[in-house]
Amino acid sequence: MEKLQFVDFEGTTIENLPLPVENLKGLQSLSLSRCTKLSIDVLANMVQNMLSDFPSLKKLRLEGSNLTMIPESFGECHLLRDLSVKDSKKLKKIRGLPQDITSMNALNCHSLNIHTAPTNMVLKQIFEYDCTIKRTFWLAGKRLPQWFTMYRRGNSLGFLFRKRIPDMTVGLVARGANKRYDYCFKINNSSEISCSNFFSHSGSKKEEIFISNDLRAIVSSRSTMPLLDEWNYAEFSFTQSSNSYHLLIEPVRWSGVHVNRESMEDIQFLDMTPGDSSQAHGFALEQNLQAQSPALSSGEVNGESSRNQNVSEDEMETFYDCLEDEEAREVLKKVRDLISNDASIFLHPEKCSDMKDSLDYLSNLLSENDHGISREMITLISDASREFTHWSNDYTEANMKIECITPELMRVDLLQAALKDNMKQYRDVVALENAHQRKRDIFEEGKMIKTQRDELRKKIPHLQHEHCLAKEKQTRIRHAWLKLGENFNKIFID
Image 1 (cartoon, rainbow, N blue to C red):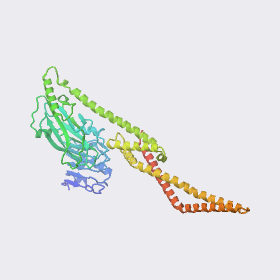
Image 2 (cartoon, helix red, strand yellow):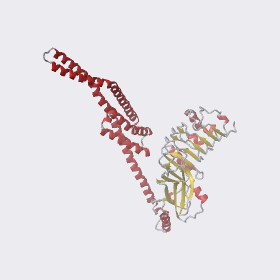
Image 3 (cartoon, rainbow, N blue to C red):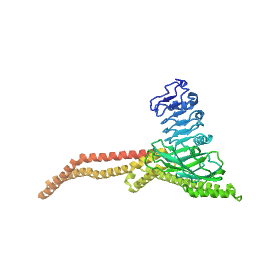
Image 4 (spheres, one colour):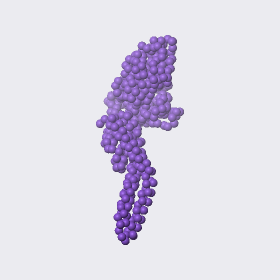
């Protein structure tokens, strides 16, 4: 048992490890993916004591687990190279990772916020620790980490460098769903070097983040391109592979780069359209000429200005994102006020239309960006938007039916009362002399009233049934509307 190297419990119903951990010191690969019966306490304890229990472990699969945190002690597992916590939707924090880890898959871990401490710093330390270790990470999210030196919207980014090809970490944000992305690299307008490096292993269509630091290794191993003495222009871009499993071409939302332990004096990020390599190459040559002039130092080659302009571009994007965030909050408050009304809102076309427009607006807006709104609220808004039209139509239809049936039910009583009055009139006239014609008129009137009453009485059971159904439908909608308001108020934070 001590020589056992591979254990796979994926998809089983185990509630604890069936093997004594003291006999697994030589274990190199362990899979506990989708072991839904494995308690969170057992899982957390195992991860906490990973080094002592599995000192030889190199590959760990915890996909679809209930794990909520990767502890700091996990970083002591120095032999671990490959970790997958994909689909672990309760995972919120990463406090430690082994310094020599080469692959991590955290796709569909939408509770994991890579922009907050300590996860943010752990990822930064890993990619800056040793640039000779090739690493590729797959993460859930809509923005590249804040520690990236430069990122911009779109699929490409250009920069100037000198002396040597810098050690860099590159990343992209794109929708998933089983797509492969090639990344291409060019220096000084030379031929492209391409590599199919990023592949989405998830079926999700949400944004995903892909990060890798093997740019320099790819260039060094595949290229003998000569470098200029001073400034060289480089550009990398991402494109969806033509043999991707998913035929729908999804654009790259963000691309970015982080310079690993390089002097920023030897790198300049350009504020020009990526892809215009001839313009950028000419700009590099111009920089080299300026660098030879004693009147200009390398610090005066528009580097700082370019960086400021690039930063301002991101600031502008952030500014308008914040405006949309504010607008989303204002519409949410409007929805809250409308929900505070009772179900009679469905009988007021103006309020009803206002509510429907607000729900549809939020549903469409939040489908692309959560704008700081909780996932529970987004789900609630989406469900309400889908159901509101049905509620409105059904409630209005039931109300119209009630309004039509109620007078008919009341008319039966009125006809019965009229028939009693007719009979009284007849008895009063009987005692009178020479009142034959009057008696005949009362009699004909009584026959007509009775006929109407009898015809209506035949319809009464059906009318009462329809009236009851309409009332029950309205009651169900009122309860659903009340429940929506209660759930909304529980989640909503002003």
